[in-house]
Image (cartoon, rainbow, N blue to C red; front, side, top):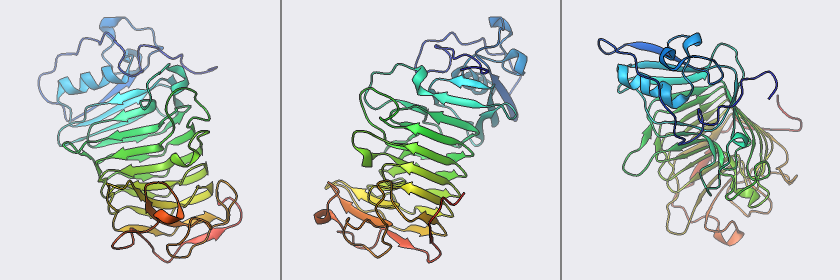
Length: 344
C-alpha cells in the first residue's frame, strides 16, 4: 500500500513462527511502560528493545512478551503507521490494563487480505483472549469472519474489553473469498463488561448467508455489553445481535443507516439455547429502511414481515419461530427516532 509500512508476513500475522527479541533485563516490576511495534524499521535484532520508536519490535506478539517479562501493570503497545496482518492479544497485566493503539495520528490498518487463511472460522483482524484490553485507533478491513474476535470460554470468561475509536469496514464474504462467512465487526462470546463505543461499522456484508453478519454480535452468556455512540452503515445482517442468554445489553445513542435483515437489535437462539434478558434500546437514530430497503416497524414483537426494530426468536428466522421468551429480551427506552437521511 503506497505510503505505508510494508506488511511483514511473519511479524503481525496469526500464529506464525517469529524469532522474538531478547527481553531486556529488569530489576523488578514496572508500573507503566510503552512498547513500540514497527516491522518495517531496520533494527538489528539485539537493538529491538521496543522501548523507543527507533528500537521498535517487529510484532504485537513480541511486544507482549516484553511487557510480560517486566511485570508491567499499565501497558501500551503502539503500532507505527502501515498495514498489518491479523494479530493475537493473549496477555494483559494482572490487576492492570493494556492498550493497543497507533503512534500519534499514524494510520494503522489491519488487513486480512495480507494473510492467506484457509481455515473456516479464524479470519479475524484481531483475536483477544486476555482481560482488561483496550483497542483504539485502528482500521479493520477485508476479513472474512470479522474485525475483533473477543474469545472467552465457559471456563474462562473474558472481562473488560473496550473497543473505541476504530473503523470496521469491508468485512464478510463479499470482500474476502475462502471458506467460512462473516459474523461480526466485534464478535464476542463469554464476555463480561464489553464496551463498544465511538466506532464506525461500514460495509459489513455477506454474499452467502447475508443475515449472519452483524456490527456487534454478543453470544453465549455475554453479560453487561455496552454499545454506545457508534455509527452503523450498510450491514447485511442485523447490526446488533445477541444470542444464547446474552444478558444486560445496552444499545444507546447509536446511529444506523441502511442496516439490518430482520431488526436493528435482535436476540436469537438455537432450539437448545436460552433467551436473553434485560436488553435496552434507547436514544438511537434509525434510518427508515433496512439494508434491503424494507421499511421498519417499531411495534412490539410481531412478524418478520414487516421487519421490526427489535426482534427475538429461535432456530431458523421465520414467523413461526418468533417469541417464546418469558419476558421481552429487548425493551425500548422511549427516546429513539427515525431519520430519512444518513444521520452523520
